[in-house]
Length: 328
Image (cartoon, rainbow, N blue to C red; front, side, top):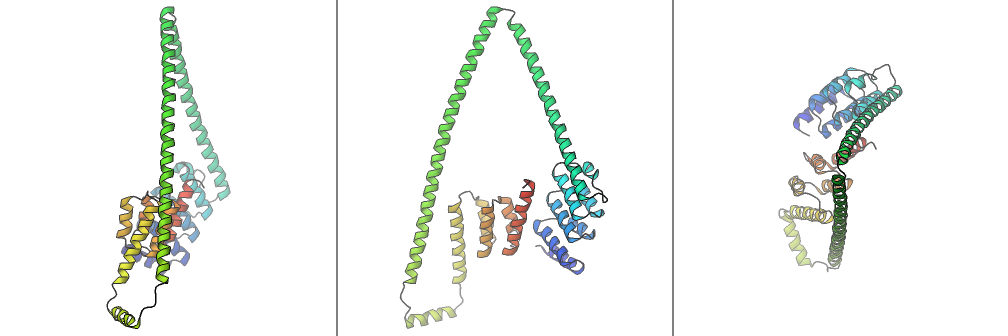
């Protein structure tokens, strides 16, 4: 969080309730601009309504829609139907046709779905008309071609033979290309399986080596008294080895990430290394990768060196937005 965001959040804490502060914090964590957040705060909405408007802002609504939501006293369910209409491709004018304070959210939903179905039907009708026009032109071309062929039986026979030969050769070529493509894909699948087996074997060897090393350390004899004294004297000096062990642990974790999934781009690894993250933060980065977040979303999660708890909230918010966009 930047200094400007922290300053504005402190101002909000003086006038807003805890639930509203949480919504403002969520908007800042996502990266929304302070002028947009200020416009929402000044509208004096409830925490539930503020959350629905923030979700709409995350989906990229225009300034006109944001002003419309802030100036009108809709409840949280009405705001959700307005947001769903924009997300499903309705224009702002179409949304305003059913978005009134007097209309319940249930009726707004019915009108929204009817508008969406009407638009789909119109789009489907346009596609049907274009297909019909295309087929009509194609049939006309075919009729003209047949008339020209029939002018001379000899010419027609020659062209017919050429067409047959062309079609047969083309089909044979397509079959051969398909066969070659299948052979290539089969070989690629075998190569990938071989790489997976090698990776699993490498991971198993590393785990075995780590277990063996741990057993050796547990079986080491106790340190003599003289050595213990020297160790205590060393501990009295500035402890520089803790930082070295932390860096070594990070390098091992990044090596494990690269070994486990060889699809992490170099620039993402460099950003993670430059962030100087703790072990708990690195664990959150690993969960982001397992959840399927892309490089840009992971970079957004580690920006400004947030705490592990905030990284977890950011990951949950990004996954929630992705599910909403996919209609889950």
